Image 1 (spheres, protein in one colour):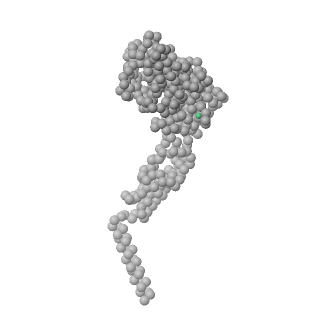
Image 2 (cartoon, helix red, strand yellow; image 1 turned 120 degrees about the horizontal axis):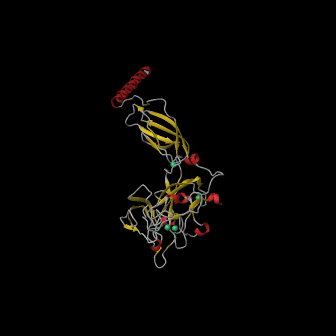
Length: 382
Ligand SMILES: [Ca+2]
Ligand SMILES: [Ca+2]
Ligand SMILES: [Ca+2]
Ligand SMILES: [Ca+2]
């Protein structure tokens, strides 16, 4: 009796087993998944802010319903078969992948080393370092009364190197200079970091906007991400972002027509004191030149003796509350923002761009055009 029951049970179990495997064979292939090769790249070194990690392992017998689970330090990262990962912090991380179906799963592990470009490419101050500008990377002024004349040539730009005695005009809105130092300017906590000298006076402010960049790919070129230093007017209504102007070369001493991204047409007006062509003749663009950026609106007073009021803080060639005590405008790298005006934490910067931030004709003063006389690392002055 006991034996008979066991025998029947065995038949029943084998029958069930047979039935279920037949069933499996009908609607799914039970060949297990596998990576095409047992050897694979297990370690990756990435640069924070520049590199994207892409991994797409080849898998044999991959059923359509297989699920991918990429995990970074055990946290789900992606469910895609092809991983595209942009690291957001430096450090060493374990990345793993599990590909699974209800009945099967395969697994792989990778090691990631994410480097902070600042640790790799930071250039320290040495005993030979200068506090002043060491290199002019670009000078592209907008049209203005001093352009192609005193204060408006490539030679005047080069003259800014090494001290603060020269004067350079950036012309009307958008015109710019890009320069660097022989070391990285560090972002000092709770402190201003560098100073830009201008020729502002009470009633004569011509606000220039500053952008900064760190040489994150370490190639010595200013081809990295730029961040604007948002001054007081960046937080005020009326300021225009993603603004643009195109100027046309009149080919002679004549008003320089411009059109902006709001379809406004106007001119940089000539005056009797400067009788050359105001359109820069030493740049690549011979007939038209365009600029992009932010436009701020200082108050221009044209009654009686023309004057331009200062903006509160954060601009160059701007006679703000601190200007007189420093003889220039002190800048804090902590003011850096991205395109969406989110504050960005930078440990230091290698490149500085200054561009004229306002546009207008201020009577006998001529066009609003930022001037700079040099720049210095505040950490070396104190
Ligand atoms: Ca700072
Ligand atoms: Ca670079
Ligand atoms: Ca000026
Ligand atoms: Ca000025």
